[in-house]
Length: 91
Image (cartoon, rainbow, N blue to C red; front, side, top):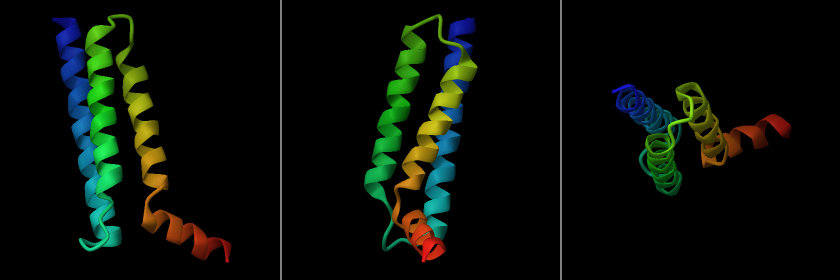
């Protein structure tokens, strides 16, 4: 029961982080330049992390949540609005 509950919590966190990413990118870039490829990578990565959590019992929930949070930040850094903001900041 404990394994199933922690897997459900991780799955909920993955869904919330993906939804937050989608909302932030939609408000920043608009519908015309939405990063569908990055969203797909985020969804596939979330599915892989959930399956790893379900398969391996020794993984802590905090480790999995932290790893996916860092993965989400890494994916978000390589989108067009963030790169444009960095270009503006540097120049």
